[in-house]
Structure formats: structure tokens, C-alpha cells
Image (cartoon, rainbow, N blue to C red; front, side, top):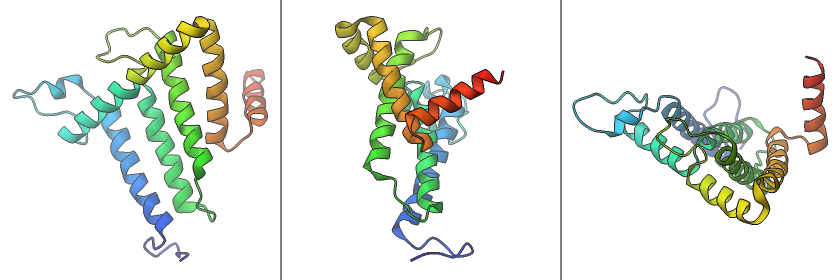
Length: 178
């Protein structure tokens, strides 16, 4: 049922929201405190804020999706907020598809356009490697960028709860103000 602000969560969506909030906090804490040396073993204490498990969580997230791991953490926070605070308490398949499309497009764009530098993982992760190499083989770098950018705009407009027109208008206003 509907919970009063002073009550513990009682509905399945509220409970799922609290669980999602905890998972998002663990993932983001693991990511922000990631140190590749934590996985080397030896006598050095693990520096990751979440401990040894956090070092592995961050390592596998970065390996899989690169910098998009942060997006997954922030999207999880948004979903948790909706589940806990919204009267409708619906995230829906559309939101999950939007999140997936956002991660896929971001990994591909990052893999194509950002140099790896001295990072211990590919910036787009394994997903970014597959997406960028698969699409650039068909469309070229520019064609792939156009496709993935359109996909990213749709995904982020879903994340923000705005249509693409409203989102692009807000971005345009922000750039025109300075």
C-alpha cells in the first residue's frame, strides 16, 4: 500500500526502489574510487571505498561498458527515485530500452572519439569495441557517429522525461545564454 513518509517501504515498487538505490550507491562508490592496483594483490590494502568487492565491481563494469558504467549508476539512481517517490511507480519497458540504448550509443561514441591514454581498460569497454567496429565497418566513422548520436539523443530525452524537441530546445537555450 501507499506508505506515509515516516513508515518503512511497504509496496513492492518501494522495496525495489530501496534495493536499486543501494545497488546504485555501491556501483557509483566502486567506480569513483577505482584503483587498478587494488586487483594486483600483494600486501597493499584495497583502496576502493566498497572494499575488495567494489574493486571487482568497478573492474567488471569498466571492462564491459567503459565510461558508460557511470551512466548505469546514474540511471539506476533515477529508476530508484521513480520507484520510491513517484505515485505511478512505473519505470516501464520504454525507460529500460532507453537506458540500454543510451549505454550502447555512449560506449560506441566514446570508443570512436576518445583516446585511451593510460587507462587500464578501453574507454567504451567491450560493448564499445563491438558497437564501434561493427558499425564503422558498415557506415564509416561519420555515419556511425550520426547514428549513435541520434540514438543517444533519444535515450537521454527518455532519461530526462522530455521529448527530443524539448531536450534539444533546452540545450539550445543553454548554449545561447553563454
